[in-house]
Image 1: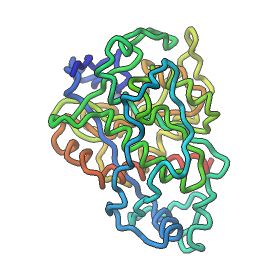
Image 2: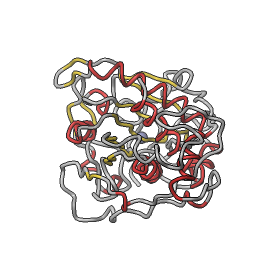
Image 3: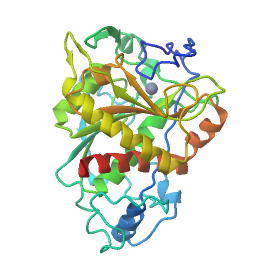
Image 4: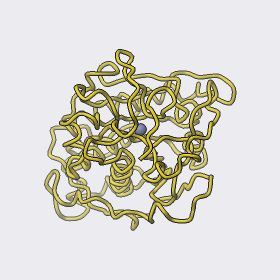
Length: 339
Ligand code: ZN
């Protein structure tokens, strides 16, 4: 499929400052990893009566949403509120050593806290790209205003060498995270849920958080770095006040979310910090429309390097993707239940 080049114009993290390669799109994709909090294991056990083993088949991929070829190809973001029945409710608990207990305490009555810990809170999940983007290059190549620059509406994203796309990955992990967060009482909105043929554009992805009145947002990606590099990293917003962008109010809370996500994701998946980009798993950028234009705390996560064979193997594994989702959900839970 047609792939655009990664780089500043791509909403995926820029290539390493060290090696800003012009990657042929289609060769670059990141991964995500899974969760860790021990209290979640307790919570899940209480909720459904079973303590699914870490990585158990309960991690089966959520059923695909409406075909990406559905006719709802409007230019507006197809923001759709999640409903508890739209995703699998299985969230394999973990037996990882995490003992943080945001809103819940291991040993408390089964599920009592977990079912309500996020009640009244709204989370926006932004699955990077769209599996249908490659077939809609005209639409996604349209330039949009991100405040301090103009860049493509959206990009195709990367993929593993075997062809597993970043768009598929990010949507699957987002759905898994939605299931976990919904079980904790949150209202979860996905920017796209496989229910539109392309996009939405990056500026619309940012606006979706405002529209949803989200308390926090995470954009899920897989990176397309150099084959020899591996690991994950989180991208936090730099302060951008330019044109239509003014994200001043979200920089500090987004940084807090970013740190929580870095730690939670690492604990849940065991994935190391990226060794080819960022520093200690953290980066700050001013060239991402999704962060420049956001009015709610938001970070990106590049769950792994889809061009790296070891990362690609993990990211292609449904059990690992469940762990990735767990890490993302746990970070959001911690962010929303602590100060
Ligand atoms: Zn991406």
